[in-house]
Image (cartoon, rainbow, N blue to C red; front, side):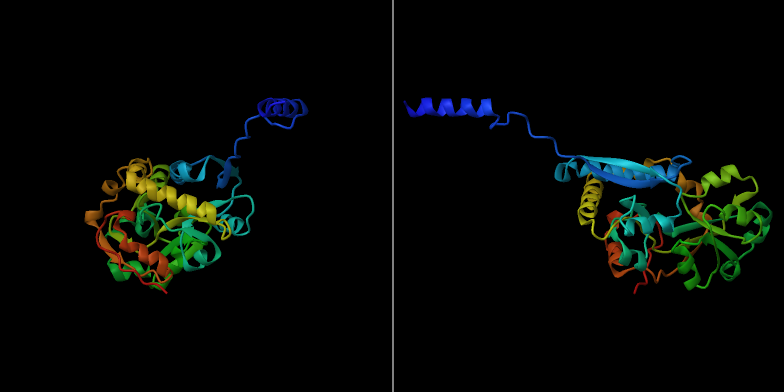
Length: 302
């Protein structure tokens, strides 16, 4: 019997006995990334970060493969969401303003998701206080009671710069302002517009602009280095090809914000952020990561 005939017979026997698997290899499972979303529905601010996460994951598909995102619909404050990621429970990624403490507990993806916009603050005030704030100077605003979320890094930043801060639940801050618990509610420039449309007794202070370095990052569990690498790769790729800026400048939360904020009328108060890590401060040397607004921010870090 020739060798070629023996080979043919051997292959035939393997097919009959099931020794050769002709089924295509199963597709690799999708990388499922869980994030928290409000049970009340995704608001425009959440939608921006979700869109940016999807952009980063899509841009990184070539290197890291397929993916799927999943919204975990549970109402939780920012502090609890950060804790869930730190404990590797329920959600894999969260977006938050950074601090030295947060970077110690979680793995930050060191790309400012809002190009530093969180550190440009304009204030909401009661309509009845319009005349009072129009006459204020820098010393007066530092004595004014300000409201911020209890688990926001801004509480410590403002306090360390000599401002009087009242902390409260982030869902109660508008009610606290209306009830006179505090008189000034600093918000990032993209944030106050929905509240102004909803509450006729609240107006925008046009006197002051508080400025401090305040990047907001995606955070993942310390052990989830692959996801951190994937998100950073995708974000940096989107910065290079322009899709990051396209999303940032044309999203509903940021459109027309510079014009509406009346920056040329404001007194600028530049603050230090002593809770900015050295790694975060070093990013200020990468101008493509930041929104271009004057003045230049000089960081203070530990």
